[in-house]
Image (cartoon, rainbow, N blue to C red; front, side, top):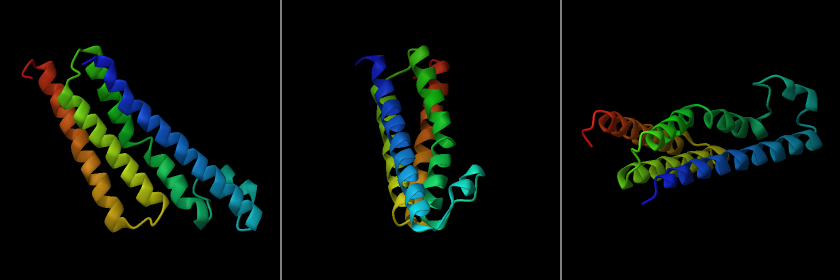
Length: 139
């Protein structure tokens, strides 16, 4: 196993970010064309019409918890801590981000979105615990 494999889940997250940007762009353009919104209202955060509000919120979500994910992946790579276990956790985290984004961008039902978020946060916590144990030379 190559340590560089840790970069693939990171790249998968970057792809998700660009997909969310595309969805946001299309929804905003649609809102302007339908008359639901004016282009000027997008100057300030929080002024999205209902049709694009969830995609705007999801985009912000992609720069919150995932920041910790990218940091731990880079830290594992730099300290030679990449293992099959770390890779499984990294891919699980990304799977939860895709699920969270899917729910957020479609039905936006909290009862479905929240479990995806909580699962991702728990997996990420395990990845950080693994990293700490790696630094302590326990794993």
